[in-house]
Length: 257
Image (cartoon, rainbow, N blue to C red):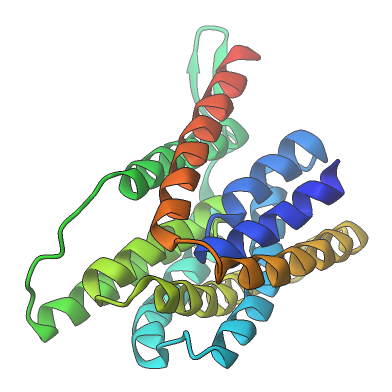
């Protein structure tokens, strides 16, 4: 079952340029029994490698805007590395205690992840008009958004594509196919850069390599089949899926107490 889910992660990345980590973290935690903090690190590697292969395929199709991509990616590098290296390690294992109820670091990460998913689902489902902006304003917003996505990526192990694609479409006015390809380029570099923050930690490489290999297979299929589907419709459908997954995570995390 977990093998099929790994392929599904790649399929989704190939289809809409993001969303793989939304599945990767819950699968690693709930299906494979990986601890949440480790799962966020593993997700960076899995999504980063799979996105790298996907970006290469989109490069051949002419679907990558390198100038805008690097403008977004560089501040993201800073955000994700700072988050993994300094922010996450300094979060205490027990944050709050309310009687017999303890909010642990693991619980906080999963609930925070679910909240980010809810926000992402709303952004994918809501129709937004593209306002007129000056070139300077666009660039500043792209840089700020890149830094924000990098910080979120480091915290929850998400590639950030579910935030990057809407930003590229709305702020840079890229058409959907080019936004997807550019998003995969940003995700691959940013996620692998963030994973470097885990260097020296104990890692189950056998699990990580096998899971990643299947995700790579999935992304090849995703990129191929994305040519035959309308990107906006896929985005809305996945928005509904993200919303439902976020609700399930919230219920599971609080129900077990």
